[in-house]
Image (tube, rainbow, N blue to C red):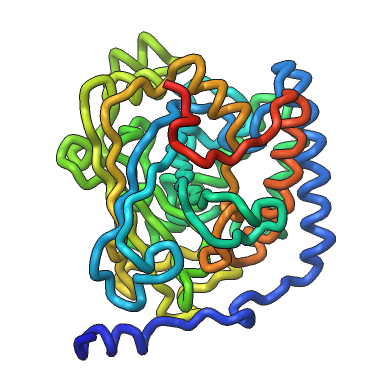
Length: 374
């Protein structure tokens, strides 16, 4: 270890149980969130006669990929899953944020969920102790606009109140736009696609973030994934095909992903941003952006996706009804942190159980990439 690496390590906040601080009325607010989400889930089931995820309900592709952890990572990055160089098969799910099946023409946050297969070691959740998978859930937005459980409850109440009216989408978008203005004020830029995905930007060129903090072995971090190969890096911040949007307003995102991977390979880079100041980079308020001048993202692995059929009928059903993505489905060394994630832990568990029960499709954690249908 050289002097610069030693100096860097001194600046990184060490993980301890004291990092997290329980918030006033957190238990009561968390129960209220979960109860409201359960009522909304039932409304959505009646609407579709099929249970959908309470967030990121619409799937735009289920992909097979390979995660390669970099060799010779410095000590502060060689943590948990990333301790040793290794290749893992992964399943990737592209999605949009609402808990309903909305037309793609409605601008919304997008998600990139990653399930890594072959991860040995006891997992954080009791029911997943012996599973061989690790999940990372990423969104093309650096923060959670409703960054505390109290704000999350307020927003969830609006969702439930307006679930059957057009105001639902407007209320969700309103929260996103307020947060977007907040970020733009912080970074001093009006149109920086690194930090806020403008309407129409390319789903495969977006940068995706964990938004909330996670434990990163001995440290605390946020995770991001960004385009690396030229064919996707060149799409970053660019608008999508206007003719396609016009001709397929309901599902052009699915078509874009499908068409791209018919004959192209894409490479992304996974990176970690380590906390250097718990006051400036808090874990208990997910709406505060960790600025890169305080701690830059550092590369830890590459993700390669080869040509394939991303939206076959079998893959769509497998991704929507069989698989479950949960940020707490993880090694203890990578568990999510903060009150917004503690309430989400309850929400994910409740929602997943309801969805699999109502669809009569037991949740299955894959032990091999061969379980992913062609």
